[in-house]
Image 1: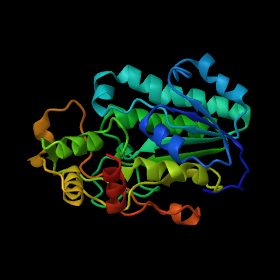
Image 2: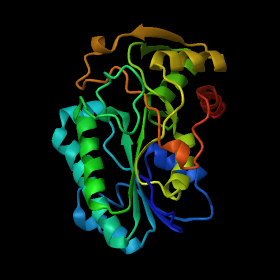
Image 3: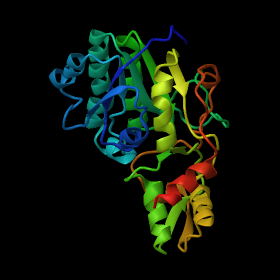
Image 4: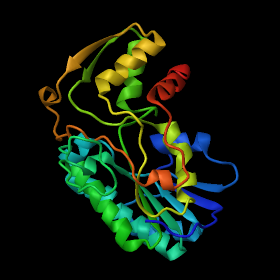
Length: 284
């Protein structure tokens, strides 16, 4: 699970315009030379375009780009696998050519949610959705093709411009009523807290799989209720059941994450959820 620590100065970041990429731009350490690559710069499905990664001569590739809409993936599985699986294979091949460490961001949706307790790195995977299956396929491509790799699984990322939780908090602040699911559990992860740990984790020497997610198991309803109370937001919350929403993709009932590996990396776990919410509320 570990390898010798390697110095790195040049870090290529795919998905630079996404939520975690944007958070990383704000919190990336100044000591490193970061090369930011959006989808326009680097269409993952095109192996010729992705080979430009090798020409950048990175020491580390932070592979954050993905098709992340769970329902869009379910409705268009070909696109999901082209981006999340084949695209990851292209990134891994470019990383191998450059001799780079490939750090690929993955998801709790590789699990089926039936364990009844948080999942650690050695638990059996079993995705329910096309999104989860395509991300798991991407994990396997990176493992097979990039000699130096680290799969970082995270959960329920919020705190970017376009995620559901951040939009719901804005609606609550405006006094609107918001529906939120009460019967699905995860470990909500604040994008800036995740982003500021990715480079230290890449340089920690850890290899294989590591879970890096928020420390608290909860529901989206409870998360938004806490945000409303902490921020004194005037909006209201309506309880929803996941199966009543008619969404195309199935969701795991409890995909919360824990880690057996992270304590040995020297990278600090994420702060408490209330700290993340206070930071997000302070910036609205």
